[in-house]
Image 1 (cartoon, one colour):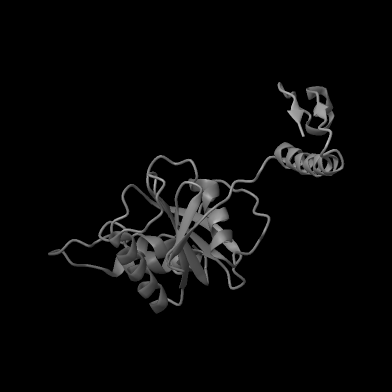
Image 2 (cartoon, rainbow, N blue to C red; image 1 turned 180 degrees about the vertical axis):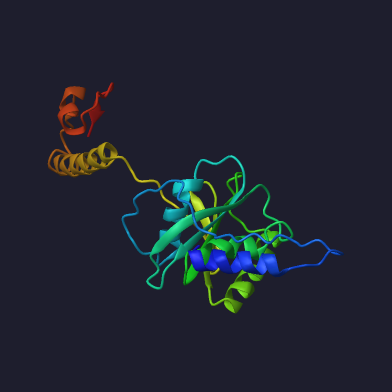
Length: 224
């Protein structure tokens, strides 16, 4: 606050003379966002529900209670910040739009994405989820802040309320398993050729024959 503003307030206070009703002191405050922590996000933009899920799960993947999270984005769909709105059951009467949009207003956000998790692992939305989403979307439109989506995070799956569908996530196969499968397919092809050539005279292969191909020990012999 500048000196002129302070002086103006002091003179205004001195000019008030009302012995019957005491004056009410009005606080002059300022509101700002305070950074608690940060992390790197490689994709920089959020354009799909899957990309939104990958962003939200960073903070919500291992939580044991239901949480509501809002992500504020700029006009290029780049995330500005993440804010935990509430912890506990998501209820339309408890989660008020003003609490969700407060961080968006302070961030000068153009749009937001909501996240909340279901510790049960099932991302199917409840009636309270749908009602709260509609209220927040309508209030955001009045303020010029678009609600892009509401992502419900489950166990290795998520639900997009905007798309009205869920999607399971396939776990990546370990590299060793992929290499072993390729070697196995190659080995089967070789053995198939040998089988055709030696169909009249079957050949017995000891287990040592397979170890260099698969990198594992096979207890029994294979006959073709």
